[in-house]
Image 1 (cartoon, helix red, strand yellow):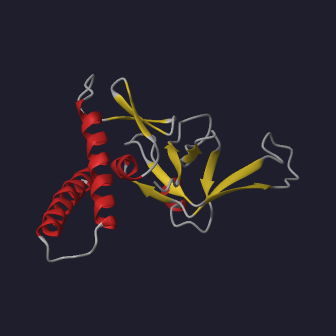
Image 2 (tube, helix red, strand yellow):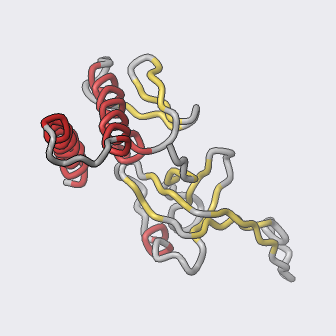
Amino acid sequence: RALPHISTLMRPRRGRGNVRGGRLITKDGDVCKASSSSFQTDRLWIAKEEGRDAYAVYHAKHRTVGVDTKPTPSAGQADIYLNEVNFISRYALLLFSGNVELKDTALVMDGWLKFKVGEKGSKTGAILILELRKELDNVMTRHIESSGDSDDVDGEAMRTECQRVLQIVRKLLQDEAG
């Protein structure tokens, strides 16, 4: 699997001042902003305190150090920015990226992102996602390895199975999007 860089949305919290936009947290714990050239900058800025979990993939991370002449606690601290940020659904992450394992009743991706799937206290939803992921991998591998002979019966059966699995994945992703 191609593993993209993944981050999760940290929603703003009410504090002493005004509520400010959300930030993105990476696996190594860095709290980041989307770079100014990212079309997701506005989406982060207007993030609300409440809402569903949100995840984003990004291309690169860079750190800048600003020079500030005002004596503030943040003067001279590095800001960390993510380039080419794009939000992604949790099922797209679970099906197409990272290493996923079952721990108790949740799926854990790459040892840090925890996903509760299905009914509370049940492993069934998590197990179904893992099985769908395996089936999707198998179907894609068989399709890539096939000889391309479209006239044989085996080729037709494989195309039918591919379409069935892809239809299930499409339905899952569409239902999640609402």
